Amino acid sequence: MAWREINTHLNYLEEHSDLKTAEHFLDELMGSFQALADMPRMGVRCNFHRPAASRLRRWPVRGFENWLIFYQPKRFGVEIVHVIHGARDIETLLR
Image 1 (tube, one colour):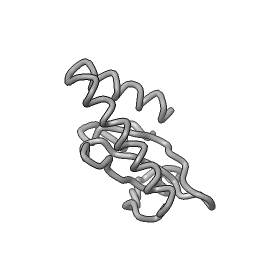
Image 2 (cartoon, helix red, strand yellow):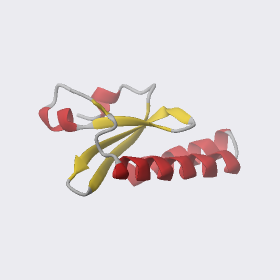
Image 3 (spheres, rainbow, N blue to C red):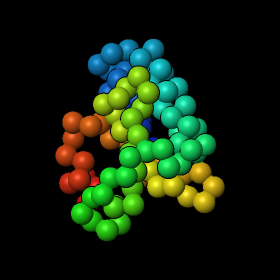
Image 4 (cartoon, one colour):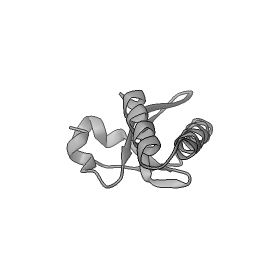
């Protein structure tokens, strides 16, 4: 699911900005993934109403703070669940 969302964001940025912006977003996204893997608990706990989503944490993509990474800490790293623009109705999307 997350890779499909990422591809959608990349296509949007390429169409509405340019290829360089989309590539920069991808670089920053991958850097954010690595930072989260190194320190899995640094994101803010979401506390959504739905029990399965209540374990999620969120972290902004550096330089693109409107895009949020939703993930779950794992024993060795993290599981990236979603990458969603912050203007969306996030709790509804995560149902």
